[in-house]
Length: 148
Image (cartoon, rainbow, N blue to C red; front, side, top):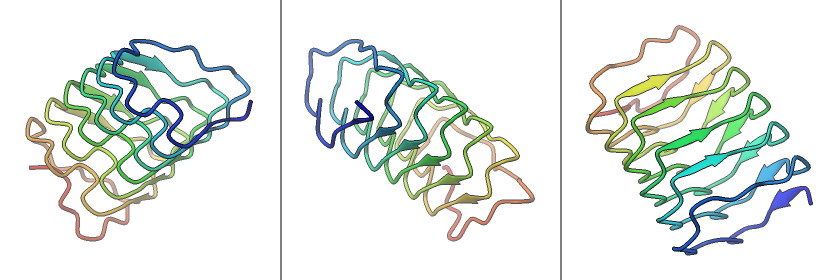
């Protein structure tokens, strides 16, 4: 198995944890969308891409480790993960797409690596607990409505 397929666990409201095999390289779009009981999740080091809305609306998710192998976080990948207090972007990530952390209302700390070269519009829009503007000299951020 090399990927978690599109919509694979979408809407599995009783899912609280899951072990992903080390052979997985991609978590496809909406794979875990609306898994509202999923509280923590470890993405294996083999994963390079977290696609569109992969964890959208996982409102109980309080911790998730993005592996150092990941280079890309897709549109709305973690949108409305409203219980997350902090997020550290791994050193390998170079691109964060639009709305990736949008609506993560409990997010108070965001750590970005020097490897990040592009963050798209509204990446953190609606992060109402986040009070800091980011200043990163290598970022290209069009329409930078980062956070409220």
